[in-house]
Length: 91
Image (cartoon, rainbow, N blue to C red; front, side):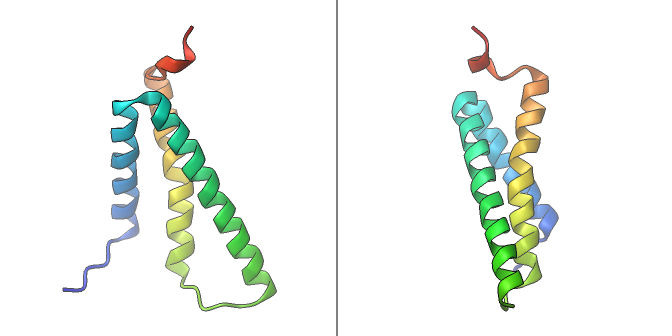
């Protein structure tokens, strides 16, 4: 049984997980989305810089998953901010 999820499934799973955290507590969800996306963006940039210096055998799907991990939290943040669910921002 060798199941490999597609990029779309990984994207949907991340959207569901980040949305669940947002529904539980919007402040913690916002912080986790920002922190995780910045960490993954940093890792992608470092990986690309190292790839320019010395060619490695990192598969292409790694970069695709990292970009999905960078973008999907911001989609959730924008979705919930347009819904008006960011209650910690109101006085």
